[in-house]
Image 1 (spheres, one colour):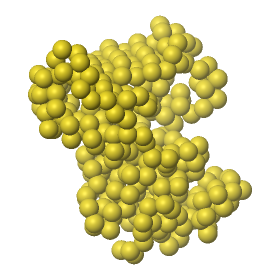
Image 2 (tube, helix red, strand yellow):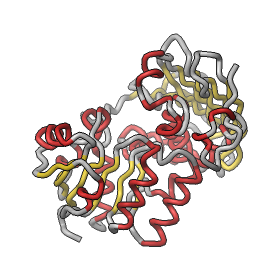
Image 3 (cartoon, rainbow, N blue to C red):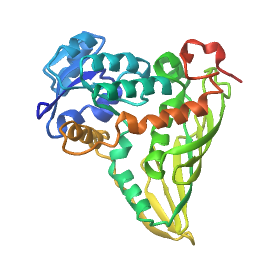
Image 4 (cartoon, one colour):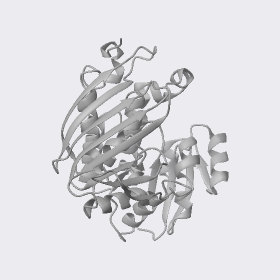
Amino acid sequence: MNRTIRWGFLGCGKVVQKKSGDSFRNVPNSNISVIMRRSLEDAKASAEYFGAPQWCDSVEQLLEKDIDAVYIATPPGLHFEQAMKCLEAKKAVYLEKPFARNYTEAKTLTEAFEKAEVPLYIGHYRRALPRFLKIRRMLNEKVIGEVKSVDFYLNRIFLQKEAETTWLYNPVLSGGGKYYDIAPHTVDIINFLFGNITEVQGSVENLGTGCPLENIVKMSFVTEKGVVGTATFNCVAETKSDRMTVTGTAGSMEFSVHGKTDVIVRDLDGTVIEQFDLPDPKTVEQPMVQSVVEDLLEISECESKAKEVLVTYDIIDKVLDEFYGGRSDDFWNHPERYKMK
């Protein structure tokens, strides 16, 4: 493969502008060669912003360019078809989360790319952030002893305008509600830190916002390392916050998964023995993009390949299955099955 990874962007919205796009031109041995958007005018504007020499308005045109890999940053409902087209062209893919609309689509993509021996990476970028790497290292060094339990809560404010005007609440494009948008990062970091979840139970509710999707989700689980845990997602709260509390035989640790608060480590008496913050880089996905580039160049292994994060979507679908009246098929085409209170 060319020693500089030449990227094609498939989609270039707000997430790309804010969290990821600059990474592809900032990390060594990587550049942005072409940007595709539905509007040619928008594609040109994005290309000029990121310094890409080419732009286009179709997947087919993108795949005809001299590129090594494709970054797909479109709504999840488009991921399956677009990734398959990239696979047909033998292009490596870095796919934003959520991976797909359900575990079925994610599993099919994983198996297809593996069979063709074409790399597929998923944007669970917290796996590469310095803060979570240090947390994992401290847990492995048993700073709080043997980890016994983990408890997580998240509060998010429901915005009616967002529900009415964005794709986030349209399962055809999103795969679910606010929980489905947020939970992949949370569940994945639980798997990353404590071992994959092997047992899970959940309760799912809709509190009648007028949007017939999940907005209160409670999970209880056990990981392969024997860690027991709970996770509660309140997507109709009055405030925005989250916290993960890890309890071990020699102390505890608290930190935010989605926010920017300090990591606090306490002994069994509750005394703070360490408190620190490792700020995220300006472009938050840059460490993961660098890991992907280095994996493509066979410099080092990336820990966010499809086969490694696939279990996250199996877990989420098990939690949501009853609420949606089944999620293994094209449930997004059957809104009559969704429960609503």
